[in-house]
Image (cartoon, rainbow, N blue to C red):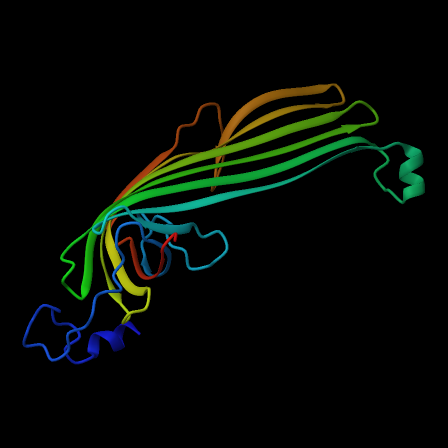
Length: 264
C-alpha cells in the first residue's frame, strides 16, 4: 500500500504547489486531542541495543498508543504487564501413598512455587514538521524501562527428617534510550496512516544474576549456603556483579500503522 501511494503521479509533490495537477487533500491529518492505536512490523533488529517497543499483535508485545497534545507534538507510550504464577504444597504418609497409588514412600511434604513477572514502560514524544507536506515527517525519543523478576521455591521434607529447601531469585533491569526519525503517509481521507521509523538506541542491562539459598540435611550432613550464578556459567560465586551496555544505529527499523480516533 505504501509503495502504491508513493508511485501515484504527483502524489509526492507538496500540496501547496500550484503547478501540481493533483492537490492531495491533507484534511485527514490528526490535530490536537486526537489519539491513535499504533502497530508495527520490525524489518531489522540489531543484537547490540534492540528495544522491544513494537506491537505486531504477537504474544508479549507491548501495547502502543499515541496522543496528540497539539497539532505537532505527540505523546507516545508502550506498556507491557506480564505475570505467571504456579504453586502447590502438600503432605503425605504411608497410608495415603499406598491407597492413592503413590510411589515415593519417603516423602513427608512438598512445597513448590514458580513466579515470573515482567513490567515494561515506554514513554516517548514526537515533534512533527511542515503540516503542508504530504509526508508527515517527525523526530522524537523514547525512554525504555523494563523490570523482570523470577522466583522459584522448592522445599522437600522426608519421613526420616531429611529435607532440602531451595529458593532461586533472578532479577534484572533494562534502561534504554531511543532517538527516532520517521514519517507517515496518510491514505486519502481515511483515519489511517502508514509509516516508517529508524534511529539510534542505547541500552543498559543490569542484574540478571540468580541468587540461590540452599538449606538441606541428609543424614548427619547439613548444608546452609547462599551463592550466585548466571546463565551459561556453571560456577557458583560468593559475590557477583553483572552489567551490560550497548548502543548503535538502526537497532530497530520498523514499518508502522496508525489508526486515529477522537474521544468525542
